[in-house]
Length: 609
Image 1: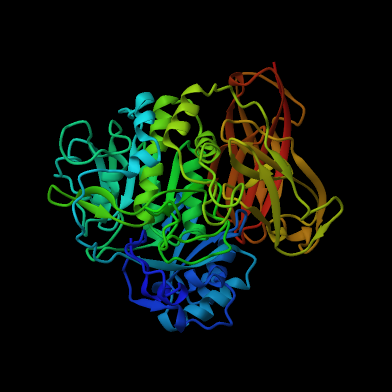
Image 2: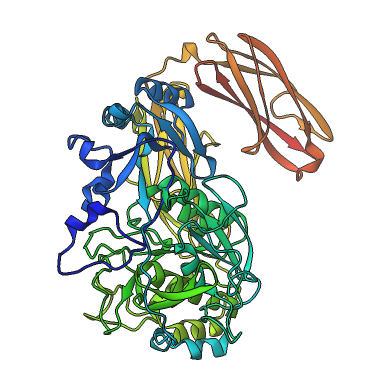
């Protein structure tokens, strides 16, 4: 991949870039540049990094992620006040795409940044491909010896069950070394099944990772027995956006990819892409990302749910074009990489774009050798087995070192897998017993788990009200949605294999709402404390001076039914199949949401025989 033009001012003139590992873009509107954005705006925190600030972006789009627990009506009002219109969404990432006037991007972001409603406010950054040089054809892949591939292949060459997704410019579906490897794909940009390559980059990346091998022609892919999913995320000119890269990752996750290669940069601080990588990680998939080809340095630490790969040169040191920083996990060969090209051709490529699929292929071999491993184990084996270079230990140039295919695959094949029975850790310093909460308040929860945290759930008075699946975990408490007075707020973290932490519970007071305006709930049948059996019809009268909105029924804290309710007063009922529940005590809960979005809770205790 080739860096965006603005990055050239960031690197040394003595370090020319040959190729890059950056791409993508979605163009539904005109482009802008970071120079048009006022330096006074602090909503775009990523722009503190010069490499990010140099990127172009869609001039009339903002990508936002609301805090879990944010009031939908307050969000709608915030968007309207900022002059923003919702034009798209990726529900799995809680991502909302807003359209604003191009000359108001700065002010709209500043307006939204004043609200305690949005976890992420980000420009829809653009990445662009450029021409791939026509280098000399080489007859050998000497770099494979550097990472001990032949020894790794003695253990595994991949298998049909371990799928590699190439999220890129598409893949040539007719190439002799790829055609029989591709099991499907998607064109995210055009929303159709035509994943044909637009500029050739994705075809080269796919060949490095998994070209058909041992067939007396062409090149040897790293995981030659693993199939390929081809995911095109670019327009006809080879451009795409943060939004489409994230959508491509999610498509791959939802279509059974195990390893997802993303040869775009700079993504080390992109929160939208991180959200997609976290989703993949939670679901047992691993995203591998190229470090970038601008030859610069960043202070970003990347994100632990993905593997960032730098490029080694032919002289045994880091390639001059490879970006550096704490975010780099490992390095792999990235110069004179022989691979497939469009039209049944072959040639050389340079860049972190082609170092990343080497690591993606090794990850696939490791999973083939031991399918029971989780992504965290694959990451640990890649980094633990890497050959340390530079200063001792992990550094910002080589990360953990040069990837060792043989060591990684061997470690995977010998690893014993036992069930993770350890609950996640959880803590917070954002809330304490006795706190009085009078306005929207963001609570930050620290939670970690070796296998990965699936989510953090906030409950108020025993009713789950918000769930955050994105690290760092931040949930907003909006007291205007509840009665004034004392409440119990609790947080529980659950990991990806189902272990849950003990609840962090706090007694707090919501103090800015008068109870006289709250909804009223009166259970009329059966009586509180009754002993019941079989199917039981539970009846209640509900009312709200501001008008009723929705009534939700829960059994022991689990939602079982909800329905809209109109007017200021109504009788509601729910037929509870108590025989389906264990004998003993149970709590029936009604949550009434009034027309203003405020919630009121009522509980009924029943005992089943």
